[in-house]
Image 1 (tube, one colour):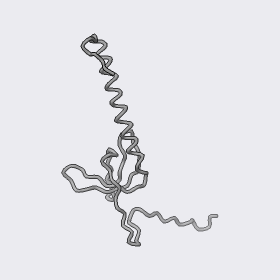
Image 2 (cartoon, rainbow, N blue to C red):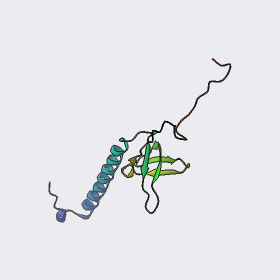
Image 3 (cartoon, helix red, strand yellow):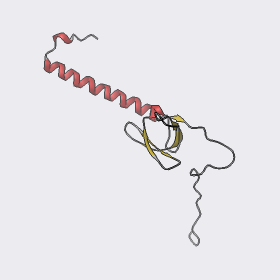
Length: 110
């Protein structure tokens, strides 16, 4: 499909520009959403902030364009899903701190 923009009036060009920008925004959101669905809430991930050491944490939330990652130190990061990779979980037999919740039933309650 070829559009001869030389023949379009200024209002037509402005309208075309708005539609192109809206379409590009939609395609970016679609790509981010598709990439986001490769990860699950509760999954351990790693990412590499510019000028800093790699950061590992757990996905706690999906946002519109990003996912929220909480590090073991309690920091919260909103990260584009295409910057994430799965973290290697050590299986040394000992559970990692912060990843295990022990539930104790209340005494006298049924």
